[in-house]
Image (cartoon, rainbow, N blue to C red; front, side, top):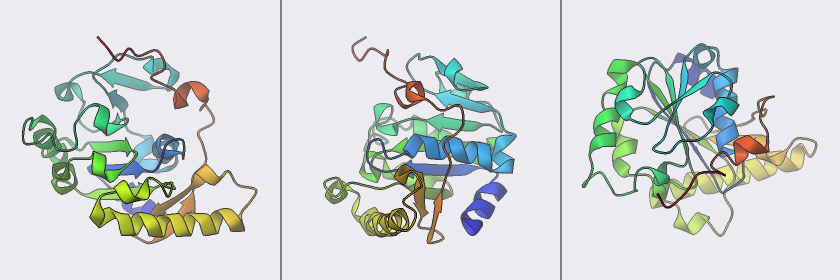
Length: 208
């Protein structure tokens, strides 16, 4: 991942979007990058979310509930973006696009996980520099992908499948593909990761 690594390491602001079907390692990819890339490792880390959850299970991470409370210079994690912002919501609520337009002034890198780019408002993709990290997407999910992303996700699937076959001793969820640089690479799961992290919203109520 030489070029992907170098690009992310040199980022002062922007978006890193981790996509793929459920339980394919989208979230672990973001946290692995946050621990692996030197320039990210030194940043303050916070989750932005509308709900309260036990963020203390993430070592050294904070939790904020408004975008105005996201501190300058941080890594801001937004888990499953569609829970918080509808894919076509910018016409009704411009808060997120307006905030993303300011992250370059605040030196914020936003780490987003999503199962599908069709879940993301296009305004998000136009707002700042984006680095894409694709996990595997199940064939049943691929037809629902945004048309302009579908081809690169299909390529990601092919590349990831090839690497899984070539490295059967590596957890298949470790393999990722960056379309900006046509690179496939493996990311280790953070040592502190557990089933609690993969089910971080287990105790969150849907009806409030």
